[in-house]
Image (cartoon, rainbow, N blue to C red; front, side, top):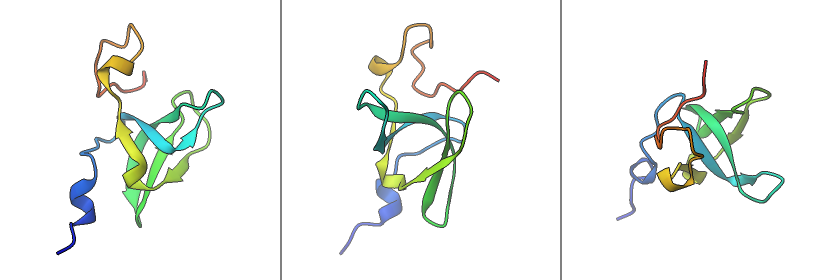
Length: 83
């Protein structure tokens, strides 16, 4: 019996900063974005500093590891961008 694809997805929270393993920044690290929603099988992310939204496959998203979060972010893996 095959596993339900939704069961393998992380429990993402709207406006949570996540890593997109399918897209890389200029330094080759996974691109970080603000998770918005999943529609029609695509995850929608917004750049942290503003800009154009992009889509990726939901299975390519990963929650930020607290050890990877910059100092001053409060070591909060569910950090959100400042409003």
